[in-house]
Image (tube, rainbow, N blue to C red):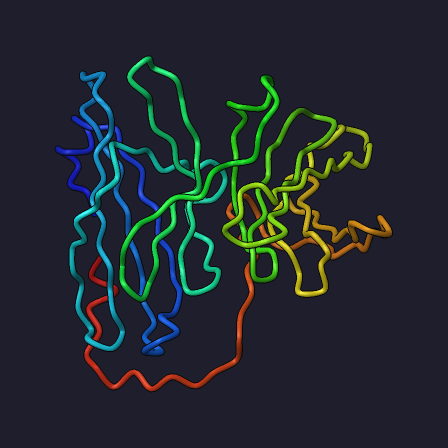
Length: 241
């Protein structure tokens, strides 16, 4: 936790991610704090910590990334794909241009890398964006307006030229709710949140819609899981953070 006295002096955001190092079968949690002085126009700084279930310890990573902000709009959690965690991140260039990219943390070697964003149209570059798993690759969501949202699918993981754009129209209701994408099922259907509590799934090929019903409130996340048994026989300090 960030002490109150410090919170009053800095602007900060916290994001977490959970995944597995496939080489050692070690489950890991990453915590990223992005912060800067409230009275300063300087670029944000990052503090990165990783918790290992195998060692039951936290350690601080030294990043080689230039000053970066983690974008926590709608989803402060990282997406775990192919043994790595993924966040939407941004930085300012020397001429004050905002550059967005996918920040990747490999859980095996605990090294950061980047994946380029799709080639956005001029009016799409600064839209709030979130990311999720799409099979063994990534999906990127942009809420464009009250009428529709963009979904970008990375057909080949790690290949930025394989981003493909799909437009999802809102199901018009009495209040014209903006659809918010939460993630994909293994079947390929996208989960959409239509209002405060209503969720539907939509097949991107047939456009078939299924009513999932009421399932949660503002902070709702969708992700894959694999059933497994993991023996945690070490004294964990995970909850102390």
